[in-house]
Length: 192
Image (cartoon, rainbow, N blue to C red; front, side, top):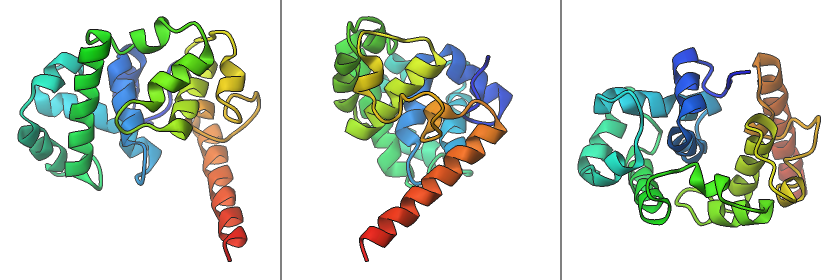
């Protein structure tokens, strides 16, 4: 089963085969629709004139050039400067700490907690996004280190529709959207 995050076959194919592109999409998945965030890695690759996003290539890019690529219409994110800087820093961390191999971040981990801790340290991540990404890896990529479900609670639960971890088609995407909308309503009610 292929990924269904971007809602565009070419963009989803890049995410499927390129772990660094997947991390970039996850960084961008905030304050924009999910599809926009996960289409952005393919658009960025096009603007760079490459077929694949490579952490070493992005880390060596001039940060201002990257900002211009992010801001070029259609902008890759509603905050192109901040997100270009964040993606540039992400690329640098992947090169410095993982030798440019984004997948090593989860491939070499022995526990789910270890993956969450490593992800949470990445630019553009944090504890919640790290849990969501681990749930995605477990549910859709077959990454099952010891304790992975408990490390990503509540996102790792079977049959849930809480995050991108649960998006496998149009129907599940709408269920996730509805659950997020309901959670926002609940939060608004408790903060009145």
